[in-house]
Amino acid sequence: MDRRTTPFSGRIAHISLKGQIDAQLTEGEAASVAAPLANLLAKPGGALDRQVVYGEALTLIDRQDGHAYVMAAKDGYCGWLAEAAVGPSLTATHKVASPATHLYPTASAKAPALIPLYLGARVEITGVEGKWAQTQQGFIPLNHLAPLNHHAPDPVAVAEMFLHTPYFWGGNTAAGIDCSGLAQAALLAAGIPCPGDSDLQQKVGVEIPEDHPLQRGDLIFWKGHVALMTSPDQIIHANGGTMSVAYEGLQDALTRIEAQGEGSLVARRRPR
Image (cartoon, rainbow, N blue to C red; front, side):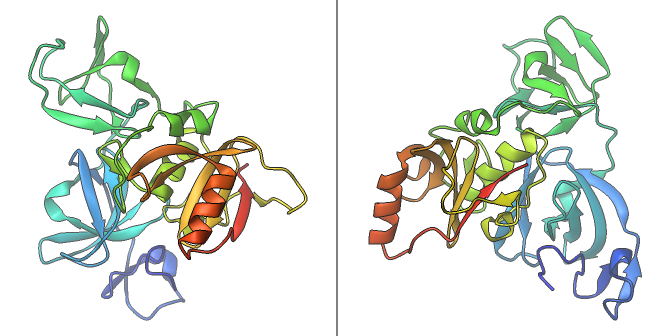
């Protein structure tokens, strides 16, 4: 079983694993992310796997050493969060649709921001004041939000909003993002299911035969790396070469990555 997608803390397992694992079972507790940005860890105090953002829905399965073992609703990714980053379940109505925004104490751009919010963060709007959405926690620019059921028409356009964002391994936001974080952010915003890591993402959509041309929106994979096609001969990706999200010519990327000893493409997928 892949620990990233198997809801088992090592002591307690989610009820969905009944009959598959010999452990105490639980239905878990509905929860959400209470911090602007939280690191999802391989073990309490351990290495970073991925990140989750404010308001994301979680299933809380176990607690240990000041950490909570959770399963993220958006992709089933499992891991440990600092317990302080976990809050009660949230009745969200909207999500952040821009790369980043801020929560303010009043409906004024001159007010000192309370916290940053990132693409995909979920909030409950309780009212509208001019160009501002009101929540129980504060105010957010209304044009930075979209209803939960809104889907961006073009995942590549979402990825392009992150141009020049610094590369950060395991990152999922405009504060820092990696290749699979960028691919997931783009696809989820467009309503296309997408797991969190590049090896898991190689099952997204359908395989593109070698004799079929690539097109905008396709995913291409090297071992441990993923990029989105912006056109038949250009990609966008978060990469360690520029330490940023950047455009790169497809052939330039193929030549450079192979010259670095990292091999050739291992998969070409077309998301549905």
